[in-house]
Image 1 (tube, rainbow, N blue to C red):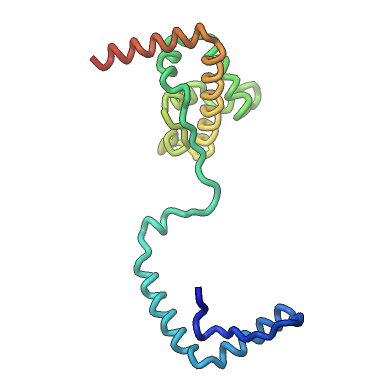
Image 2 (image 1 turned 90 degrees about the vertical axis):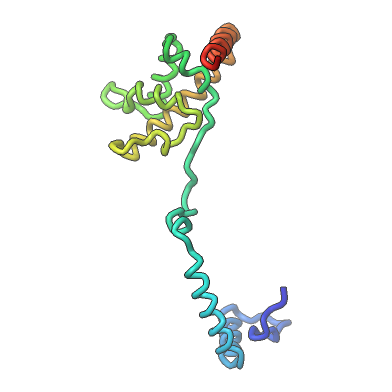
Length: 181
């Protein structure tokens, strides 16, 4: 890409010039340049164009910071069946996930088991999907963290136990066949 005519390209080379001196040389040449006023006018005109093209969506959506954490729930097809039957290993995984990912204080879990079970029904677990208007952000984040941990644990358990996997797949297919007649 060629440089504009107003930017000097004849800076001395071949010997060391400190950066601040290089900047001073460039600034002095730039200020003496006859194209400076035209460049400033063109930049001001472009600035007005840029200000009018900014939409509300661009202003409201910040691209700064960490992106929100989401998880495609691998156990979501099986959770309704497991939540209805409530096998002991399911409760153990959910309670263990809450205890290890969120923690407990004074012998009580910091998140309700029912909230995590409700979050496990989602196909995509995210804070935005879990948050209710009356719920603080930290609580929604804790529930999402425990639900992501529990979803991975349930998925791991199902595929480490072939008899449970076969039974759940059979029940899931039967449920789909009866529900969508």
